[in-house]
Length: 136
Image (cartoon, rainbow, N blue to C red; front, side):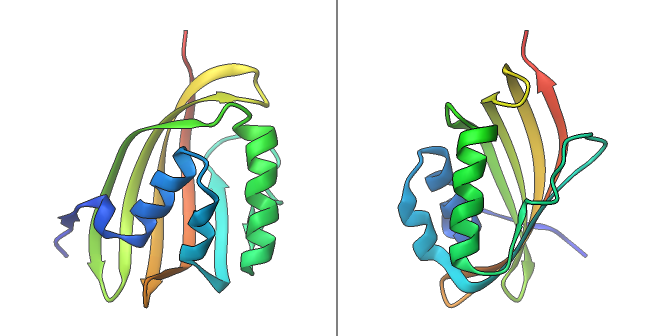
């Protein structure tokens, strides 16, 4: 399989991440009512069991909690690199810098997101947080 780079702005997931970074609530207009959403963390001791949603409304609550607990000062998108996998599927690498509320520390993080979009809305989202690195 060959991964085909695609401009993040040409994907629904890229548009959602860009809106998330600037705290634009219109990102929810790009989410399917029956979204299948989950965030997983690699080797992190933080409870992430609450980081899943099955409806747009539950995702709105989840994003509100993320905003208050994880991203109290927002986030800065350092890079959003997307690859087309075919039939609406994308693999996206999201590199960000933010003040991590749980650690009370500035950090960077790289995550990998597998997503699916159809008819201009995102209906599947799996994020794997690979690292959270303290910025000195």
